Image 1 (cartoon, rainbow, N blue to C red):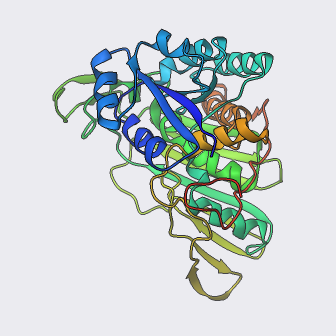
Image 2: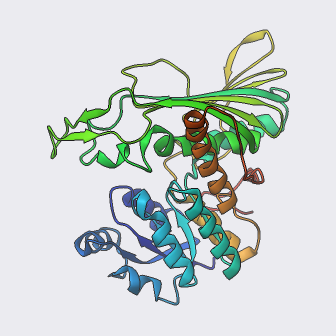
Length: 368
């Protein structure tokens, strides 16, 4: 198989699973280099995963053999690094969110289009076996026409376990921008784009105290909403509800449920790639678990990068694309805007529903 060389910018914690999968799982990819603002981190990851070159970002961007830059920097650096990579003639796959502001997101899409390059980003969990099974069930009519959905992501934040949790409570963070991309991307992949939103958002605890090492006892001033409740009108006519919160001590809420004209589908955690998947049709029988119809049910982060590589080689559209990632960004801002301004937000962006993965793929392939 022809390989596409990639370079990774940002060698923090999340880079390990990407490096593992991009070097061991997806044979279409070849990791040619990695870079980080702290050279020792890039060197350590290169040694751990047998990457031939640890270098500066500028050196990575000037390498003519690298076709895709995988941008794993922190959210506030996403736009700067992505724009620099596009200017250097690289296709870019970026961790979520695409950017912090709509303006930067639009700059990214415009620059990519003007240069004939691909851009897209996380999450790619919707390409995993769990959500692809749900997609097939919906497409095959198992629950009829989707008419509504609910999505819940509630916990008490990151300061009790994360070693450096401040950025979760600053601009670009909060529960909606941290975890909303997983839930919104899953819903869009299952039900299509959103045309209008409204919401309420607030800060319950204006100051947080870190209780994890190494910053135990450090106070964090909270600058972004930590409880966001949103309503979505999908272009299809379905109505969705979403709650994301860092203000909840405990919950037994489901992750995602899709309500159809003929039944209900329980969707697995969209921050994972596997199941379980349950459905119930009308009033007949109990809940039934459905075996997964697709592979990639383990932690398959990087599948979106591999899908972009297939797109480069074949010319077909890639699934975790810029229009999708920008639409998610637009919706997230829409919830915050609607709460602040006390009105609905007519979503200015849209996207196509990403194509479903074929069934019966080999272990590491995304095309037959």
